[in-house]
Each structure stands twice: as structure tokens, then as C-alpha cells.
Length: 90
Image 1 (cartoon, rainbow, N blue to C red):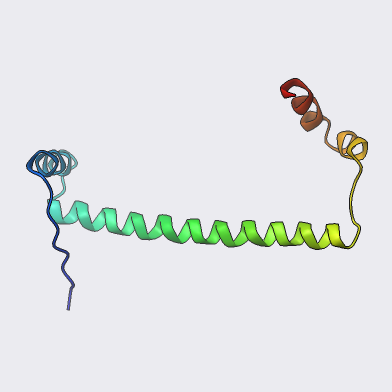
Image 2: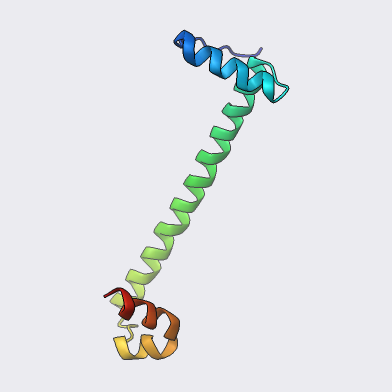
């Protein structure tokens, strides 16, 4: 059985939403359904990225703890465009 959301929106915003939905050939309900799915997808992508990022940080920490570090001059040799950018900024 489909669920229902009930919420209040001021008249100005409701009319603007209705006009935008109509302009795109959608009903209010269709546009809201689309927005809900976009929100769910965005939240899923954000959670996946956060998990990936945290894993990358932990990988870096483990490498640092193991002594797998590079001196600044080694990094600049390995990644010259980054080194040039950092010098122009700093």
C-alpha cells in the first residue's frame, strides 16, 4: 500500500512548485515523487563517497604509522604540477 506525506507549504511556494511541475509536463505528485527519488539517490551517493573517503584516510594513517612517508622534495619530484600550484598559492 502506498504511503502518503502530508505537509504544509505557503501559497506562494505551492503555486511556484505547481507552475514548475506543469512547465515540465508533470503533475505535483509526479514532481514530488521524482524529487523524493533524487533525494534518496543523492543521499546514497553521499554515503558511498563518505565511506570511500574515510577508508582512504584510514589507509593513509596506516601507511604513516608504518613509516611509509615521503619527504616534501620527493613529493614535488613525483607530482610537479601540484608542486607548482602550491608554490603559486603559498
